[in-house]
Length: 250
Image (cartoon, rainbow, N blue to C red):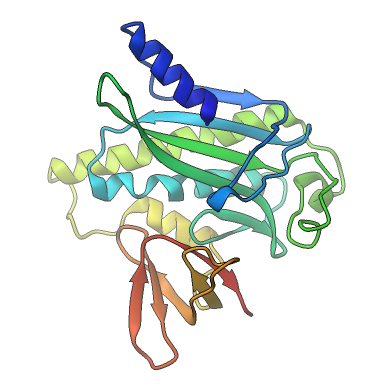
């Protein structure tokens, strides 16, 4: 993602622009991080990279891009392991252990003022060795299936699914603006997310940074029309969270 920012800046200073859909792939990463600067273990064997998307969406649609990444990953993983599921908002798990995660950040070009969405992705494909602190929480696709996976083929499947699901967000927005569908109709990406997620109905602990500062316990009631997490609190009241993260209690 650092390289993506650098390329945007370099090209803008040269009077050019970065094409939406530009993808950077790495064999491995050093100094990589996830949310809240958490260390991300990224040795050879995994799929590590970043996608640059120029933001031409309305805010309501733009907020769905992190979900599109999780859906795409889960769909690609399902081609090898149908047991995969999504934990809100876009962690992909197999047997409760994380196989793929995403970091979505906005970046504004210093000269153009253009807003970009940078989608960083890390998917454990054939890497089978994890640091002690991750061993119980992480898994790779090869460990889950018992055999090595063609990394190139998996990468193509994931990127094709990512392109489709981001395209779906754009297409549906056009349909709404053109009044071809009811604005209140269920978004097809949200329908797909619900099909792939195991979060609804689960008892969870929520926090903006849940590992360092857990805030409260609740039951996941669903997601709203913008992908927000609908939670039922112990007293029966409900709250919607549009950022943060959860961990399952049961």
